[in-house]
Image (tube, rainbow, N blue to C red; front, side, top):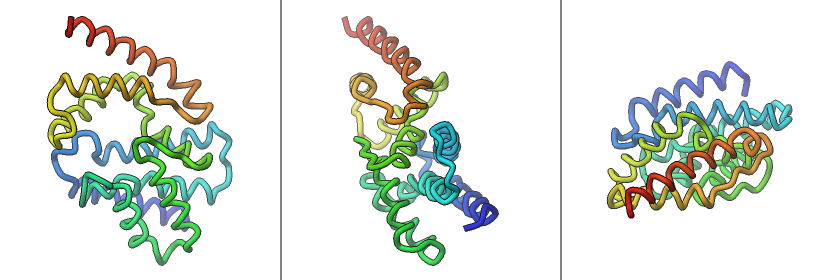
Length: 199
């Protein structure tokens, strides 16, 4: 697949997500996919991934990793693999399709990367945890979780978010160096606020 062909695929896929994802997805929207794609490329470069073929498969995985939300919330990663295979079955060979699907499935929570590319896409998927825009993005996830009944109220959300941040770890050296300390700061602030609110 040429760079131009990927750009066409990127545009058509992001346009589809913008048009067709449910309105209740206030976190898993087209903007999230674009961000994961951007962060995947950035982390890969910082991690020394220079093989153009590997970079292409990584970008395809990032682009398709949440397309399953077009059809389902639960087990959306499996649906994302199906969509990717249907779309690219005549453009990639079986080993490439399998590699892309492996990266998509690695992003399922709890994340389970099996190799370096898997680690990169997992860190890109949760890059926001260690960024300054964390409060805004996490609030979008809160609203989405409430909408889909994943949490029952804001207290439930706060407990789950604090637990998630406590147990989450970045995989790549780049994300550990760049995001870990900011993520720790976010966690400390959340714990402080939670403690004051519930004493």
